[in-house]
Image (cartoon, rainbow, N blue to C red):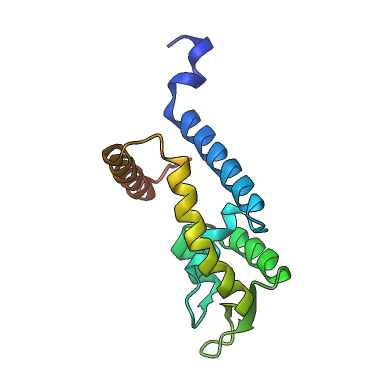
Length: 150
């Protein structure tokens, strides 16, 4: 591998660029549909059940750090899509719940995201798409258990 093609020959760069490209296309699609949320906010919205969920549990479930989730929740709260309340079982925790506006948006988004994924991945035949998803999930699961010591 020569220095000129260094970035082109490493999967980490391709995956990073693919992630950015998918995120940009998804955000443009959502905007074109009149939906004012970002793709990075969707895991938070989709993880909140009817009865609500503590902020830390949302962070744990979606695999993001608590501060990132708190910023997302604050943004969603300003848009009146979620509300944050003191957890009745443990007053030290905050519980995040979808507002009626948030529930409506989540139900609308589920269909929109399925359609978006069909458009974005229509270049793959069904067996290729299935294999892509299997491989992506496998890599995700394996990387979760890798600890890099600094």
